[in-house]
Length: 516
Image 1 (cartoon, rainbow, N blue to C red):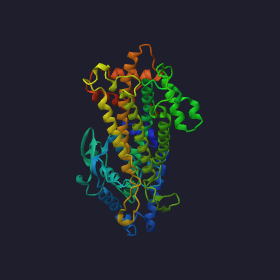
Image 2: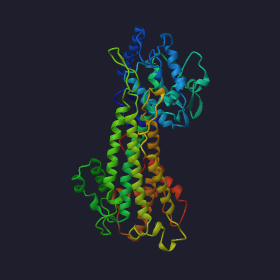
Image 3: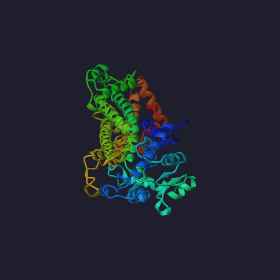
């Protein structure tokens, strides 16, 4: 396994997923190391000059005009971490925290934060050895970045002369949660005493928001491809018209995502004899307009991909230290770009789930499913005694309704903090958390559609023994049936749908994948 090299400029969303989920090793590049060393020297020069510089020799937020002596600069950094670690709620998943650690290390590697290389190396050592801080999910406003969760992260690997275990936070190491001080000791890692500005450099920036959003973007790319497959299978099962996917229709509109999705569906249904078998002129919107809806979603995902890629390679703390020796105070920590991207992702994925549920409904509705048994019971004589797939559609509809509530934009909400100094906040972390939940819900909806479409195809093929599925849909259908064989009568549908969902979550269906 090749070690990922970070330099502050070239981290990808795929890199974040590999390190966060698959424990891919990381190291700091030589170029990054030299840049960081130079930036750290600038902090020393600023301290020696005696000129006030925000966060280096002054207080924070509303206390920006209060000067702090050079002798107290280390205490200033440690106090910042201790006082800001006030998160609440359930803990973030291990992959989100690992993603944030990588993004923060990369940000610091850019060389505008003034930290010593030892800070970055320690974070990378924690990633490589599997020391993961326990970080509460709630408490961030997204400006000045994710102060609260980043402070919980920093508790574990920073300290002061007292070195109290009760001030070291919590961390997981080798599957056990313990005080951060213990976890670091068991991994043979030494916690570090912060210097001037280093506390602010660590906890200032929308890093958790960006890392969480990066993982959602990564998953959203995959969800879109799965949705092309589920739409293709449902359209085949309903004997849909292939005209809606003709390239000429999409080319004259010119929407890139739409053109891509139409091509994906054409390739999946290629060779199908079920398509056009009903001789309908046109289908319902959930089938006919799949390229238009899914394509707009794909365009939105690609937009978020570009925003988040820039953000995970950005200098986001404050102040920033430049090669000229100037320390400039600005607002790169503000999470508005991430908040917008997360909101747009949430809205688009909610729509992906919504149109999928409409296809589920059409598949089980005996008045809409082109002659299949109502609720997809095994045969019409079984109606009543068997409920068929009535309830899976209920569950999908419930998740769609939940997604619609979660998709209301969070970035439009703001409350002032820090005595009015921080009077407009991004709410990016809440937006990213909601986008994550929407993505999880949508994965379940798509798994339900695939499960439902596979059953509809079983019944369709039984009635038309000589029919052929498309090249791509046949491969997917066969893989689904290897995991969950056809059940004639009512059974526990839930565990079977969960197995399909697990197959999707493992990226194990018909080779559907994204670049990695």
